[in-house]
Amino acid sequence: MSGGPYDDRGNQDATITNPRGMGEDDPVHAGGHEHPAPGGPFLIGEAMTGGYGRGADILHSCTIAVDRGEIAVIVGPNGAGKSTAMKAVFGMLNLRKGMVRLDGEDITELTPQARVQKGMGFVPQTHNIFTSMTVEENLEMGAFIRRDDISGTLEQVYELFPILKDKRKQAAGELSGGQRQQVAVGRALMTKPKVLMLDEPTAGVSPIVMDELFDRIIEVARTGLPVLMVEQNARQALAIADKGYVLVQGRNAHTGTGKALLADDEVRRSFLGG
Image (tube, rainbow, N blue to C red; front, top):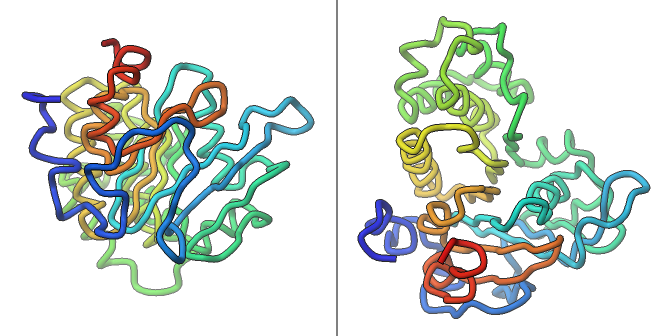
């Protein structure tokens, strides 16, 4: 894609590209099983098959992964299983087949709470803030698992999202949609996570706010923190992505770098509106 708002970022920005990752020139390939470097990706949900409760499988041998310093995005049509794949990685549904590994450790059987303790920061799409609490109280709640001084992390979040510092004593429920999302992301960062997982972070926000949120996500990735996100704005998300996964009916349909997926005729025609 040329002339777009993200042409100077994403895969062209070497500061957020893990040199052990896939590289910009990797072609798009059908399916999506990883071919990781020795030791594997930092976080991977591998060949995941499962659904909710005793219901039918929603995921079918689905694989998604992200490495240090990478932004990996999961895109696809409505009902493709994007959020389900994210929840499976976070432990919110039982896998019937497959596994999840974090930093080389098999965490498939761990609860979501235990995965937070291991270093997963997860931001759900909805109900992701305490509306009656102030902005600062929300951020402090994010540090509930910590026993050290959180003041430094709090200042880092305020540097990343300056508007939150201005509104830190205001009830979070009074904020705009975009500001609420900043609170939700900031609260996840307060845990000092090893990986940040975002489920549709720009849902319901204006294009200007979406652009700003993507800027902040890029800044987070530049620190070396892996970012895995589900995103409905596929074209914009792939523009900042080091790695992209296109899901269809719970299966990997296409996998490649964000740049390669944007340039692929079939992906553009089928999923990006031409």
